[in-house]
Image (cartoon, rainbow over all chains, first blue to last red; front, side, top):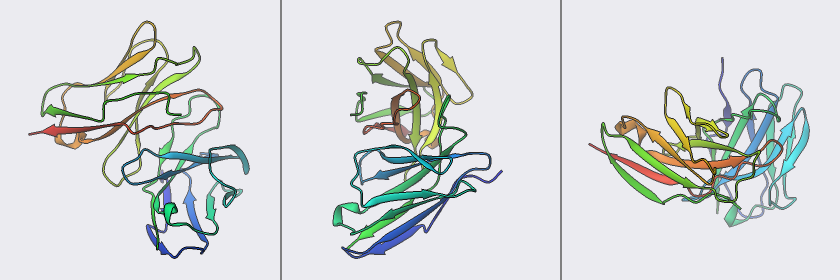
Length: 114
Length: 109
């Protein structure tokens, strides 16, 4: 059984650029959630995708967008990057959006915006 | 809106029990208490969850007070590998996971 994987591991961008982060969910999981974790803070919920549809969103602006594909992998896109977008971006997959929702986290993508 | 309060840091001697408290005084009747931990630079790892009753698994025990306004995560025999940030989360289906800032546990040799 393959766990949650994320790519790339590290990324450096400049302010105003766009970035796409990728996540492969654990086998059998149809739900993917994305989190942003700033240094010294806990993860902050960005949004969740369930069966290719957005299924909840945190307090993030529209320049944060996502996709989920038929194989349940997912992308996080961030447009017009700002310095404060520098963070660890975590992806978590779960068996379902309902019921017991143990989330399995990937190792994260470290984004640095200069 | 984390809905939980945890001490920012704690120390525990290796081999002793680590007791990590969490206050969730506004918890609703249908919200579960979840615990995750995050070892430096890794993704959070699920530990345990519960609703009303005390729970135990191979990693830890979870003690929830009768009024459900607080809980304690117990690591029975802490090892150096248990050094991590521990997050207490209240969660209900359809809502969001709010991690808060957690408790940084340091296990001392």
